[in-house]
Length: 215
Ligand SMILES: Nc1nc2c(ncn2[C@@H]2O[C@H](COP(=O)(O)OP(=O)(O)OP(=O)(O)O)[C@@H](O)[C@H]2O)c(=O)[nH]1
Ligand SMILES: [Mg+2]
Image (tube, rainbow, N blue to C red; front, top):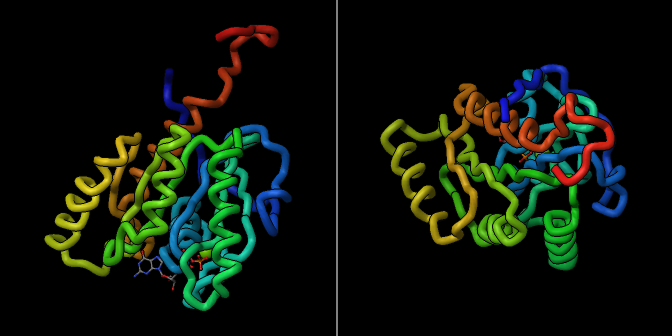
């Protein structure tokens, strides 16, 4: 397989869905960005695509309430999921959203990779571990981005990275851990490479015969 390189700068907004039942048809390829509220998901999408306000960011946690879909190329999508773990949300809503997230991860066939974003200073909270476990359970590869890496000095940054790399070993999944900063544009290359890899691994080869089967 040759890894295709995508131009993430041309990514555009497609639609928002209030919940997973209202997502567009389950075809093409999706990679979702998940993480606690305020982890930096929307900022990471903007950094990746080099667009200031493709995904809405906010100092107020819980800003992204809708599932936002963006298209990189035809049938190739990035998904900005609402953050979980936001303290101000009523317990019942939190529980429902958790359930919906689990369902999305387990049932969305076109979902081929999960980017889990965690603040480098507060990684692997219970819900983060739950997300990773769900992904591993359905053999979904995971890229963990330790966000806001600019908040730590380089020594602390490295030790957090190593700590998280060790800590995810027991999941026995396809999990890569990198650090990331939207502010300093650190780790964007790692993110781009992973997305290119996931997308080209799964996008049907254009030269394959239209009636080809059983490949
Ligand atoms: N210092 C620093 N701040 C960041 C970075 N990335 C995001 N932030 C800040 O963190 C806050 C939350 O960022 P968002 O990208 O909106 O977070 P989110 O995960 O999309 O949050 P929800 O949509 O509420 O789930 C904002 O104030 C950002 O400016 C980073 O790399 N470095
Ligand atoms: Mg957001």
